Amino acid sequence: MSIEDLFQEMMSNAQAAFGEHWQQARNYLPAELRKMAEHLQRIADNVTAYQLDNTQGYSPDTGKLMLKMQQQACVSVLVTATQLTLLAVQAAVNSILQALRTALIRVASPLLLVL
Image 1: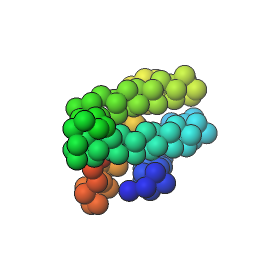
Image 2: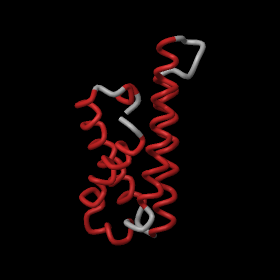
Image 3: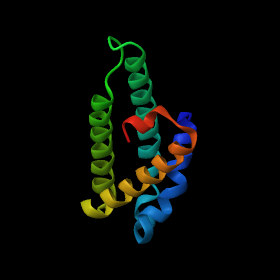
């Protein structure tokens, strides 16, 4: 999946994921999800490079840690910008990533190693 495909997949699930909080999140979410899509693609590229040559890129475990760091950064920005609770934002981001994982299964993406 391309960065744009990742972004569109996450955005297509965002309104449902945020539910009643959508109005508060919608102005900030596109920039954060685009940034997350870019990082996801870099993570996938590095994990793929590692699998081809373990002196390049980084392992799936490192990729998982990188994803977790990116997810926490996204949640922090959204909590600060929207004044939504941490639990509400975390639940919405988790829902968006689960929907993305389901989409990635359909295309057998290397990102599945870290999501």
